[in-house]
Length: 91
Image (cartoon, rainbow, N blue to C red; front, side):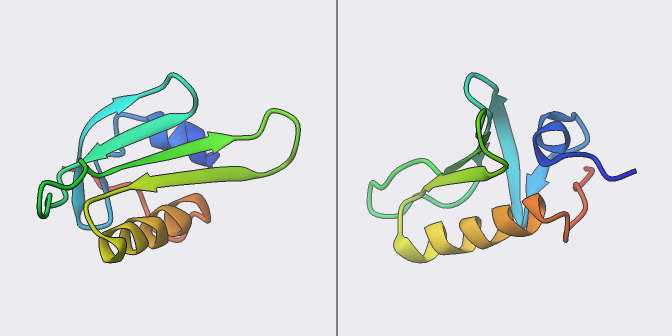
C-alpha cells in the first residue's frame, strides 16, 4: 500500500530527507522537518514544510536554507519524497 506523503512524513520511520537527517518535526500546519544541513555564513537553519491543501488536490512544499543551492537540493528531495520516488530512510 502506498501511504500518502503527509502520513509518511509524520511517521517515526521517516528519519531523513535525502542525505540530511531529520533533527525534529513539527505538525502544526502540515509536517515540517528541521534538517541537519550545513548553515553557511550565518544563514538560516534548513527546514522543509509539506502542506496539503484543504480545498484542492495539491501539495505545497516550502523550503528554507542557508544558500540557494541548498534550497534547490532540499526541494528536489522533497518533491521526490512526495512523488514516492524515494523510500523513507530508517536509521
